[in-house]
Image 1 (cartoon, rainbow, N blue to C red):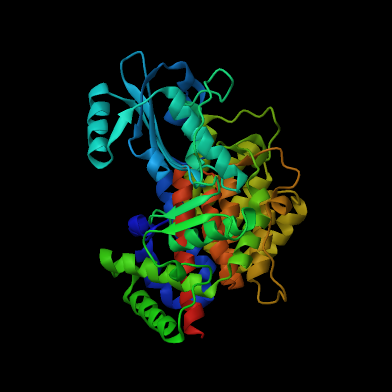
Image 2 (image 1 turned 45 degrees about the horizontal axis):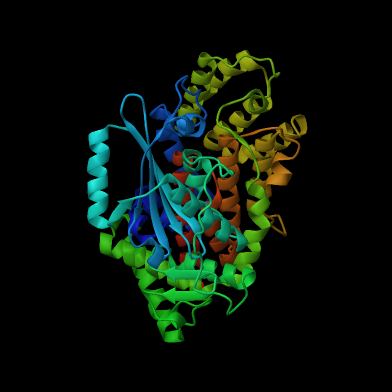
Length: 496
């Protein structure tokens, strides 16, 4: 979850946005497309495009997924006060034949949230590993433990959290869980105390989660455990200040509103670190005051099934619109990357590259989609009629269907706007690529922003944390979501 401690990273594109802010009421979607495409362009130019053909060597993530269980356990550690505090920082390290260490860290909330954060370090020299542990010890005293205890703590936290609807963090689900042995009868079962003294959920707010996330957790516990059937301890604020729909007085709200507008007008990229943290806190407080936890929860529940898709990290025959036996060569991938790089920089050159690509794969729906992307730069007014022509020719193309929904939602002639779903866009698809899914979520964000529904937008802000994309795509999506959340709130407050 985005929090005030890394909020500055969110504003990496703020300089671009600040110069265009005055046009916000007219071109909100263009603004966010510019952010996304600017960052996408930088990724392509660094040759780390998420669709590029992967190396024959295993990435650290894939190595951990496929081979880490074959490595012997080197050491396991846990913080000394884990039982008392119900919060365990578990380190599991395995050794390579070269003597280096790969290890994973798991932050396990035994109160109710389970594995709330996780990370890994791959193939680290033994002396660096020992230095890391020494620094870890300075901040959090720990002790060595058996693998069996570490294993049981992690799985006990996960199982208890799942009873109340909380899932492990995405880093655990995608990578670090594979560092653990299978949870089978071969692992000694050790009883781990979870929850409060009565075995009910216990949530302690120590400032790790944002105020918005705190309210989401409390709302979830109200639904799954029942009101008064869990323990909530707030170590940062008075309990009444953080309850659902925090009741600000009219004068308090007006003061927050004025501070928000003042800082926003100054320019996001011109704020000091202290001002940035203050701005993030003010934004959170205003959303908490204006939004309904019930409505946010309803949106979150309705989107859960959109996460159940297996994603292909590469360009495949389906997205390109070619036969299954078509050979996708390195040359073809380079042409695709070169085409996309030139769309915003030199659209005429992109057209020539696309002509070259069309000779290789034919006039497929992928070619049609890129033609429209170029047309959006060269002649935006021609996009809509050309899109109608292409959608008739390729009615099942997901990217074209998404573009239809996008244009339809921003059309001034459309009496009622709607938000697309994964089912409607990717219906009948065997696979979905990372790039397609990123474009889906990005366009969905812009369409939601256009609804000017603060509850739906706040729900999406929380939901982004559940989405599983590659790291660089997630950074783009999180940045775009945080920024559009600010812009929509600014417009809303100025219209009050």
